[in-house]
Image (cartoon, rainbow, N blue to C red):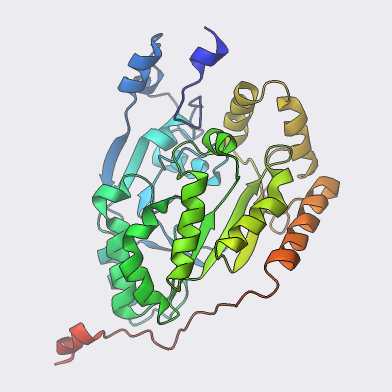
Length: 355
C-alpha cells in the first residue's frame, strides 16, 4: 500500500498503540480492513456517557494551572502532539486513534461544578476549561456542556479560564461578555501556525488559521482578554514562525503571548514518530533529533521546570525569540487580573435557600 493511500486524512494519529495498562487489545479497533473508505466509516467517532463524582481537578504540577475541569475525555481535534493522549489509557483506550475516536462525555459537568462552587470549603481560584482536552471540540456544538458550565460560573461570579483551538467559543459570546464585565474570564487561543497546510497536518480538526485569528479579534473587540498560545513550538516545523505569528496575534487584539515546547511523553513519542515519517519523510529524523536535543537526548521529558521549555541551544534560541516577540508586539498591552471579590456561594436566585 502506498504511503499516500495509507495516510488517514482528517485524523492526527495514524496508529493505535497498545494501551500500557491493558493485557490484551480490543479486536474491534484492530480489524485488518484494506479499503480506506470502509476503514473510515467503520471508525466513526463513538461518544460514551460517563458520570464522574467530581469535576474540578486539583493539579499539583508547578507548571500548569492549579485547578481545571474537563467536560470531555478524548478529543476529536486530533492534534498529533497532544499531551492529553496519555490520559486516555487510564480509561482503557489507546492514546492513538482511540483518543480521537472514542470520546467520553461528562453530561453532569455543570451540576458537579455547582456543587463545588456552593460548598462551604471551596475558596475562589481560577478554574481552567480545559486543562486536558478541548472544551469546544466539535461535539460541544450539539451537547452544549461547556456553555452550561459557563452559566454556573456566571451565576456564582467565579473566575474561569478557557483554552481552545476552536472558533465555536464565539457561540458563547453573550456569557463571556457578562463574565468579562466583572473581570471573571480570560481566554487562551492556541495558535500553532499561520500556514494552513501546517495546521491541517498538526491539528486536522481544529478551526482554520483565519478562523482562529478572527476569534481572537472578535473576543478582543468585545472586551474579553485573550492570550495567544503558540503551543507547542516544534523545531523546524513552526519554530521559524514565532515573530510573524506573535505579530498577527497582537494585531488581532491579543494582550499577551505564551509558548510551550513540544514534549512527547509516554505513548505520544511512538505516535508522533510514526506521524513524522509519514508527514515529513525527508526530514523526520532531523526534526526528531532536534526535539531530543531540547530534552536531554530523549523525546520523553517529565522534569518540572524544563519539560515545557526545554534546554540546550535550540530551546534557548526559541525562548529568546519568544521574548523578543513579547517585547516587540506586547510591551504596551493592558494587563489582566481576576476579580475574586465578587464570588458568592449564595447567588441572588438562591437567596430563598437561606430561609
